[in-house]
Length: 139
Image (cartoon, rainbow, N blue to C red):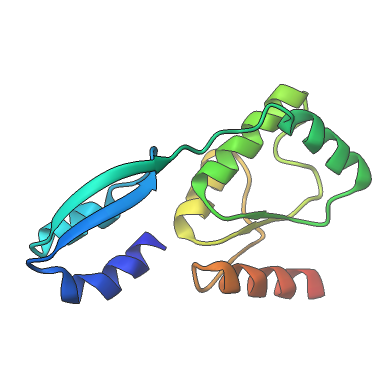
């Protein structure tokens, strides 16, 4: 997603001053690319990705009810779910549950944590993720 945003903004960013509000833990793809085309970029940590304390128990209950697939919108969603599974004593990856990834960076994180994505969105956005999920579940 960051790469797509950079592609759009880079043509207009030269000489501009840009304020980038983002997660406290994020890749530097956007600010680095915008600076490379001559923009002055100020980065502000606007939020933190934090796993709620109830996540392990909620995950345990969801798996008991049955999950047809999991969708991952970011690398942090992958790492947080893996962390919740460890805290709940649940084997990772979830047996028989396909992983649906929003894009290549998220797929890479899934693979690093031992879960091969069943499908990856062709467009790294929510519409692409929904299309990938619909395609996978229609099989």
